[in-house]
Image 1: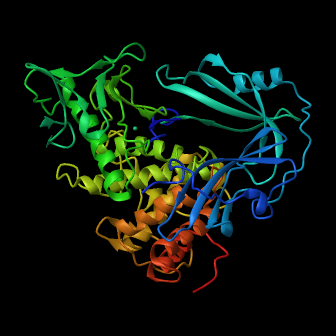
Image 2 (image 1 turned 45 degrees about the horizontal axis):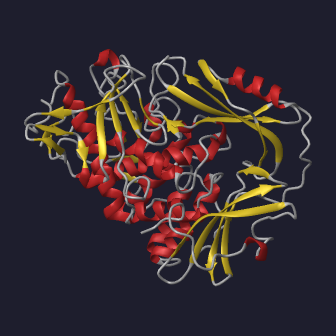
Length: 512
């Protein structure tokens, strides 16, 4: 997937920065729960078929099995679900459908018309138009026969690659939704000072930016091009960069360091072996494009531009961790990058970018709840986003959930999730990191600390969230995660309830 750090126009939104073993990557359990035995719970129709994506088992024997769904042989967008239980006994289900599917699979519109609609929906230069796939779009809870078409090309800036998924109604031809799957942000670094990095000795007089300690992740130079080969950085004395942009190595040090710290955070905190959970490191490409004010994750690697005038490379630690965290989301819940699920996807990357920054403990870039504060995209020293009070960005980021949340850009709707996390971790009102307001008449929240808040979010992401999770569903799923980790109706559980209420996300959870 590709999610970029940039916004439409001049103000960047951090599209990607700026979705123990987890359910998306663990080996299947020996005795997975069967959807056929729990058809009502998963809203199954007689025409549904299921396949296990992955599963994980808790220490107490509870199994979490993630499934994909087809309907009359068609892939169902938003039809994925997770069953939670043991030995065939169901405890609960994470499911986005509101009722079993019941619809004709005969389209009124042709695939050619869907392709034309998708192409016209793309802004930029098209380089490839995929064949439309007939699917069932259940991302909003009920089923609509649709086509999904992937349009590849370059965004209007001519430098940002794009793979836009466009879903069109197979009866009316209307565009139902679209999302881009390019997630768009001892050496001397630009932002983190003098840092230790792991390199590989190539010969008696040459070293390369290849990190054997973190899955052989590499850092290479795109030489300010948008295509072609990327040159692996090498150095004769193994002292990299100068801490200024006069050395091309300086930006590479930041990217290499950020990739390593992100790997270490996930591994040491959650037992996750890198972004892909298989021990493989992340390739990082720096000096991409000309004056490219962006950074993005494309599903397999990180890419960083050099900023306005090629003077401010977008390689700060929170940019790196944000973008790579999109890879974690992609390989777990797979949160669709539009609507409320897209806001949750973006919030997840901001949350873990913040946690990596605190984890690194770097005095040159200390932990905070601001996103992109080092790269100065706005040109006035302000950060891109404020987790403690999202509306401070002045661009429309939402502090509180409303009926409009599903309709705004995912970088703005992420404010609800960011604000929730800050409240859960640090509390509302005046804190050491900023003053967090509550929404409406909600009561104050006392924080439970970053570590517990992150553990709850990661557990919910990897075990309960599905591709179509909304904020209301996220409230319930984080409460399930809090119950798993700390017990039902304890301090942590009640804090989750209060933190969601403080951002106007209500639920049907029973009061404690």
